[in-house]
Amino acid sequence: MAPWVKTGGLGDVAGALPAALRALGHDVRVLVPAYPALLRAFPDALEIARPHWLGGLLPTPSLRQALAGDGTPLLLLDYPHFFDRPGNPYLGPEGRDWLDNHLRFGLLSRVAAWLGSEASTLDWAPDVIHCNDWQTGLAPAYLAYRAERRAKSLVTIHNLAFQGLFDHAALFELGLPDEAWTMDGVEFYGHLSFLKAGLQHASAISTVSPSYAREIQTDAEGMGMAGLLRHRSAQLSGILNGIDTREWDPARDRHLPQHYGQRRLEGKAVNKANLQAEMGLAVRADLPLLAVVSRLTEQKGLDLFLEVAAQTLALPAQIVVLGSGAHGLEHGWTAFAHRHPGSCAVRIGFDEGLAHRIEAGADIFVMPSRFEPCGLNQMYSLRYGTPPVVRATGGLADTVIDAADEKHGNGFVFGPATGEALFAALQRAASAFQEPTLWRRLQKHGMARDSSWREAAGHYVELYESILREAS
Ligand code: ADP
Ligand code: GLC
Image (cartoon, helix red, strand yellow):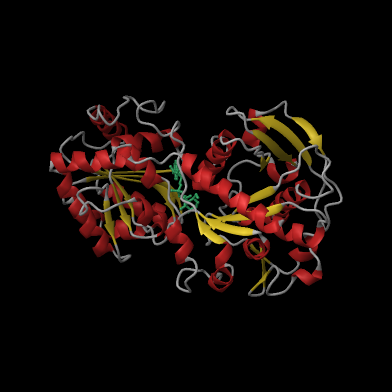
């Protein structure tokens, strides 16, 4: 949950959607593990409950209440042994999943269900529990198997690739009944899957773009869940994410050396020169500067970009990469940058400020994702006057319009997941960059796009209301 804990886009969504829903008049509270950053930010958060007898090997945590700066009440799930750990919320120091992830996120799911059940001791009861990704997938299952009077639930899929798979033994440790171990329960090809449990038992399912909602119902892109998703297609919808337009606004971004806007685009040049200097690149206004800010994983297709990176520099162009993840990609990109000093710069790590300076300083943003449920960086890029080059998939296809469309074009779109197809699009982008009138038009179309959360929040409210109507 940005700004405290973030490994990717879900952090941005959790940080911004609740406030947008509250602005529409709804009483939204966020249940979030009390990670170190949250404990530091809210040292005085008062205990409001101690949910106990949660079943299996689940411990008794403390629920503490805090108030986010935007007025959203947070329910901090405090159990230091599980959550007060340094580093990544999901991975241990060697980059592997924490061994007790089933208990950690089982507890999160179980307490969510507790809040929606009669066992809750709070004076506040939610109508709908909105669960996000596998970490909360068991909440609808707990509600289905255990609770008497219960809240309805929505499961939002931010990424179908992460399914929360564990051994059969977890069933007992999590306090789930034996009867849950079936194909229409929590079992998934011999494993217990948190996500499958959620998709099976939630009142409704959503994902973060209309295209991804269609794609995951096909065997090719459904990652083993397509059959179930097709079966539930009447309850499955796609709602495109918004972005936090206060955090991501070139006219007042606190991370930028120079602010700019649609009518004052000159300021972007200052950001570019600054970024080139910061990253040790040649300070050249005439070369297109191509950028990546991303988790370095198979999903993001950055192996394709690496494949054509040398050709790309020869266009000519410069490349800047900020990211972390798979060792092979980290190493491949770092080695490439060493061979091309002054033209390619790579920073391995997670750096919020640099991510903003890259969005502002780059000319072209590159996202060749193999699949992309929504993607936020292409929306930041549009808003920052940095036309994106994207593969036509998921949320990328729903937000980026190819330059071939003169009236609406805001970027460059390609089809096949190959280095060749990517390079052809990069070439088109680099030559358009040399045509100021065309480039301005692309930038303007992108910057004028309304990416605020208001519309998405409205769609979520309609969905919550339809869930409650169906149920009554
Ligand atoms: P995903 O959630 O699949 O990683 P998104 O595009 O939805 O992809 O969101 C990624 C978010 O994480 C963006 O806000 C992006 O700026 C941020 N991000 C990713 N990698 C880094 C990094 N190395 N440093 C800073 N921010 C990053
Ligand atoms: C996931 C997806 C990304 C999406 C984000 C927020 O991490 O990979 O495409 O934007 O969640 O919904």
